[in-house]
Image (cartoon, rainbow over all chains, first blue to last red):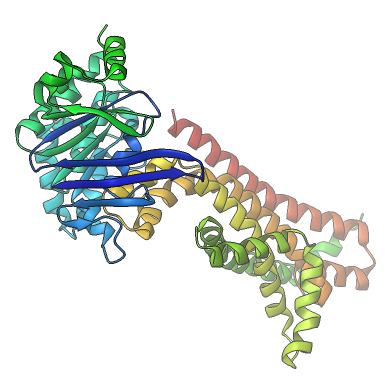
Length: 242
Length: 218
């Protein structure tokens, strides 16, 4: 489903954010990327839907090369949902308008059909009663669930999560993780940048550890937690799993 | 004080005020439109859009308006071989000049919206145009309104410079009445009052909008 081949990315001329990254993610898999800040996790995620321009290598999503000149990047992105650390809901629109904007504008769905679908998805994430609230009237957890609903409304083949719980109060993390766990169990292909190790244990098929723009270690969640091979991984785990 | 001089010539001067308002409105519409285009070009990663727009904006912001009016009015016949109608010359000068100021207000407004908003919009498959139209501009407009209203007030005052090429707008007509009646004190106090009232209305609107915004953002 996603093939990342020898991708390198520089910011400016000397700062290398990603160094020769290769990874294959098959359909229906959940992959968790962790690592210290500045390790290139988010950059890698953004390479998958073309929000970041890499200088070397190739990323192929569902058979389409992301940076090929003849690729319709808007079409590709419409099939890849993304959820952000700071939600990035449109503050001037209600939850409903946030969710229906792309289906109506990009997919050309009729407005009433998009609305019915939005209600259905909001029920799935557990907050149908917030449909006509503005983001400013929602809690952090609710905002992130609306953001997930917004991405799901496009019926994506892949979902990308960029630290979806890092900006949340502790008591709101679970409501967001529960939604993500349901999604993973329903067979969604997911790439998640996160340090939620409980989530990783429960649903991740593979865990990738990154540092300084490289993949230092990858493996199943069992291997990863029980027998980390790399010294740097062990150090990282000992710090976050107090 | 002879206030009768005002009532006697009220209609004549009011005719000038209509022209002033007309000038201001056309300039506002044209300046905004051109300003939006310039702002977009200034934010574009394409250098063939960015550089010409930047040069334009810096050029016109570095000149006094009165000079622009002279240039357009006196130089265009040299270039085109035909003299330009005063009204048209004034409109062209005002739009050319004010759009540079609008462009900077709009650019700052667009840049005040966090980058994540555009990222979210793009990630859902929206084109850059759709992102601007539905996500960025509606939010940026809210932030820009006070500055835009202020600029509109400035335009209203600036139209008085049309008199230098013989445009009979409000101030020019007051000036003509004074030439006939020799009542400078009364007439120019009256003119000041009219400008003051109009500009105060503008400032008041701007303040209202700012207050409303503060409430909204709570």
